[in-house]
Image 1 (tube, chains in turn red, purple):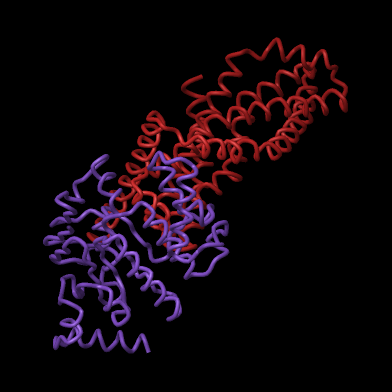
Image 2 (spheres, each protein chain N blue to C red):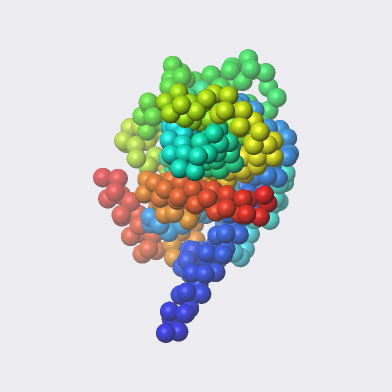
Length: 260
Length: 245
């Protein structure tokens, strides 16, 4: 019995220690973000990777999310004779909630996993040690460019998602089910406020931080916290995606319920 | 140049070092031998400041590695080159970019000067013509040569070699050893070489130390070491010869 308690205690302490290491990791990343020089070429590469190369998947998911909302919204609202409010419903749902969350989940799956795998392989093959031994700061090379790129890319991708989704909703609600363009967009302009747009932007910005933070952390500590070799990298990648996704949803709840 | 004093380290409750002391004078190369898993690479990483000691200290040219932080640590590392067992080349960069990387990041040399210096270093290690190949496109021996060129391009005063010939065929392994020797003749760096191939490296090293059961079990010049009557040393040398044959 004593041994079980001891093991439980040791596991709890280890878990808290890892959370502390993870918190310190973010602290250092933010600290080095504010200290020049920025590795600009790598930053641009990561903007291209996280942002540009995610556009297609965002366009697709945005369009279909909007179209589904158009269908569901129209049938739900028409029961109450309120189908004129389809535009505000689609707009608010996308801008405040679905846009930031789905975009973040898509980027996590596409870019977060790749970031964790890349840094994890660099850790396993001692490339990060090599950087350190050259007297270079691995945070500056590997973490800061990803963090900045994700913080900039996510709000922009979310904006694309929202716009495409709104038009997707109009395609179904307006063109297929007969809600007029004036009603759809006019009501949307009346009910969607700038504070709603800002809510979505704040959320997507913070999701960008979560994705880069968790993915870089899992890759950086592959071999230390996730086991060695290719299995360690695969575990780090899986954990990066799962933890990022969970944190995005949890943080979304807190931002929605407390901040707004 | 390098002093290791009473170094202790354990991992997961298992003692790896139980009081290691070594002194490597300037310009000399020490070969560090011992059974697999005895902590040779861990010792190198202590010297490089990648791992902190639990007790004892590593002093490089009068500065303690374990307590050095920030700019002091960077200044120490600027004087140090490390040849990793697997090369540790950046796999997203070609050979030229790998060798040029420390110069681009750490110096203000012009593009032309960097290019000239990198090409010269690649010529020194026999990699002319392979500049634009990626690490995955070249052989293990070429990876080691490229990694050696990268670690030497900054003219380090101290070189740490982690099993430079492991995984290479005897001919390529011998060529790497000869290459290290010629670089040593040219740069006169102080070095520690972790190796299993004692017979092959003994002509180019000044001292040999054997790590066993967490301490330096035996140390001496190559001729003294190879003629040691210590049963542990004899057993290891026998195994090493068997491994080589």
